[in-house]
Image 1: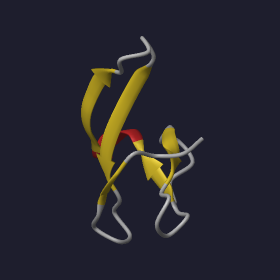
Image 2: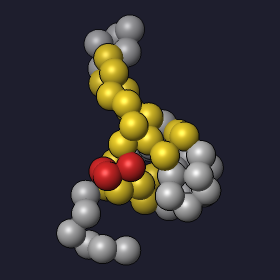
Image 3: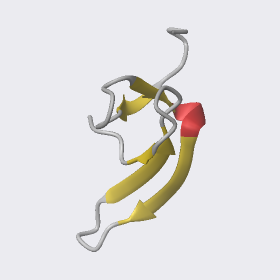
Length: 51
């Protein structure tokens, strides 16, 4: 993996790091925190990355 890329977190399905370039949606949750959806380049699923 290219170490110059920032990570959004890990995929909850396969555990691989998800690069920022795979971000799909940013949104505000009901509790006021930020949520994100991204596509995992390894397993091709749309997931909420885990920190």
